[in-house]
Image 1 (cartoon, rainbow, N blue to C red):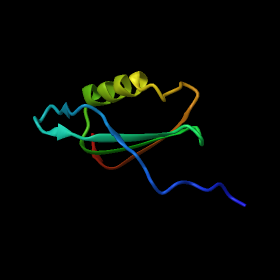
Image 2: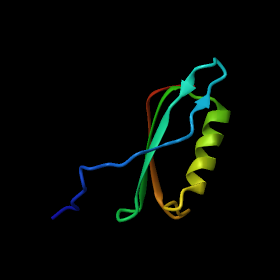
Image 3: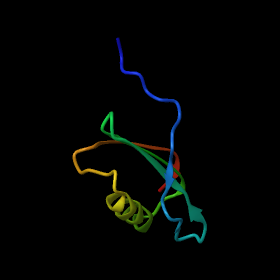
Image 4: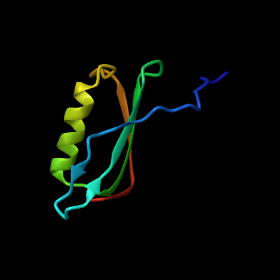
Length: 79
């Protein structure tokens, strides 16, 4: 039988980064410590600075561990 995944997802917004075009670039992530995965969803235009801010916020999260798998959805993003 497969793993049961909770449908209740608490996401943590990364402090809003401002893209080079001046608009907010939202990024949210959920750390599932039981499964050992970080789920991330981004949208809008992403810059290198936006991605760096995301990485810094994630690294500061008390639930984050460097051995976690990461699944990032960029389907609603532009670079």
